[in-house]
Every structure is written in C-alpha cells, then in structure tokens.
Length: 301
Image 1 (tube, one colour):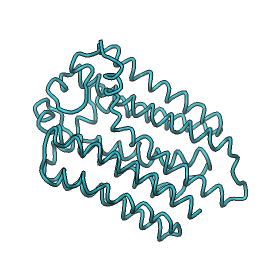
Image 2 (tube, helix red, strand yellow):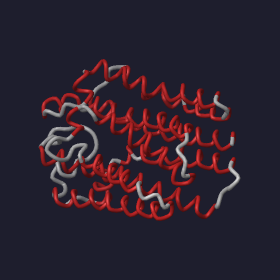
Image 3 (spheres, rainbow, N blue to C red):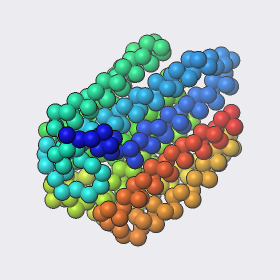
Image 4 (cartoon, rainbow, N blue to C red):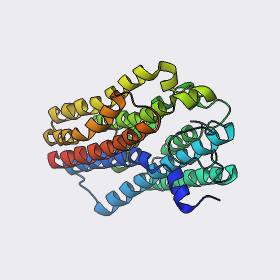
C-alpha cells in the first residue's frame, strides 16, 4: 500500500507549475482589461472566479498525472523507467485505486468548472471542460492514446496554454482577448518544454515499450533543439507584449537567468536521471516567468 508521500510524489509536483502559471497569467490580464473598462472590478467575484480557475487547472493536472500512472502501469510501460514514483508500475498501489484518484480529480475539476459556468451563465463552457477531461484521459488512456502517437506536446500547448490562459481571462471578462492569446502561447510553450524534457529522459524506455512520443519520433538531437526553442520563444513574446503597449511586461525577462541551468543540462547531452534537475528547473522557470509577466501586466494596466 502506497504511503502518503508516495501518493504525493505520484501526483508529480514538478509538473504543477504547468497548471498554476496559466491562471497567474490569465487572471492579471483580466484585471487589466476590467480596470480599463467602465464596469470596473467586483473584487469578491474576481477572487472567487480566479480561485475556481486555479482549482480546475490543478485538479486537471493532478488527474492527468494519476491517469498516466494508471494507463502506463497497466500497459507495462512503466516497468522499467527512471524519474518519479510510478504507483501502478512499481506496484505501490492497485490500478483501481490510482484510476479512482484520477477520476476523483477530474470530478473536482468538473465541479469547479460547473460553478464557473453558473457564475458566468456561459453554458458552452461545459463543452470546453468536457474536452479538457477527455484530453486528459486519452493522453495515455484508451485503445489509441494520442500521447503514444507523438501528439502530447500539441495537446499540452492547447489545453495548458491557450485554453487555460484565455479561459482564466474569459471567466472574468466574458471576452476573448488578443493579449490572453499571446500569454497563452507563452505559457503553452513553457509547459510543452516540461513535457519535452520528461520525454527526452524517457526515450530509451519509451522506444522499448512502443510508446512513440514526439521525442522518440524525431530523435534525441532534434528533441534537445525543440526544447531550446520552447524555452527561448516565450521571452521574445514578452518583448512583443511590452511593445504592444504593456511596457512593464518586459519584467518577464528577469526570469531568463533561470533558463540557463536547465538549458545547459539539456544541451550538454545528459540522459536519464541526469535530466531530472532540468525538469524541475523548467517548472521553476515557468512559474517565475508567469509571476513576473503578471506583475508587469498589472503595473502596465
């Protein structure tokens, strides 16, 4: 039976910045836009909606992590794997209990999303929430998981970038914002970077188990180049946002020093467990970037 610490590690805390960052970016964008409007801000409503958006994002991220643990575990993909605890693959917990944990998290995300639907009155948001839950499950679940076909990075970019940031803004303003789209692209790229370094680490074992991730498909050198691109591009986007009228958004460049260590690790050719610090470093970079960009947007607003 898995201990509490093993369940926590099985939730893969290093990936949680991918859930927190979009809300940190989308909510200040909503603040800026509401502050500039004639309607102003109702602070109680603003805080409640921001917290609900955060709960939805975190529950989805933890849910997809447990879902991956379950699906990879019953397929035998995790029997030989470096990295964090695998509850099913290492036989620390029963597949049924891990599957229950995954769907419990999806249920929490659904309740948070439904509450946002009631507050906004936009019932079509239910479809967005259902799409997010379906995408979370079928990443490694089902007969034909898209994560095994090399499409994981695309779906992470969409749901933990564009959808999460624009959604966090939309539930506050009820408007789709070009600024939120730019923020979503930046957040999505850094979230993809987390998945890239994770899949780079697992290329040898994924190849043996038949898991054709993007890293397996394009190979080691190209994966390292792609990682570098997803790390650098968000800083160019911060400059673009600053030049578009939000000058203080340039503060996001202060996170650039945090990119040096993970980039150096990945570019050095290290493999296996040696890449784990790059995974943690990428998560810290994403969180720092989101905080600094958000502060810059609020100051500009």
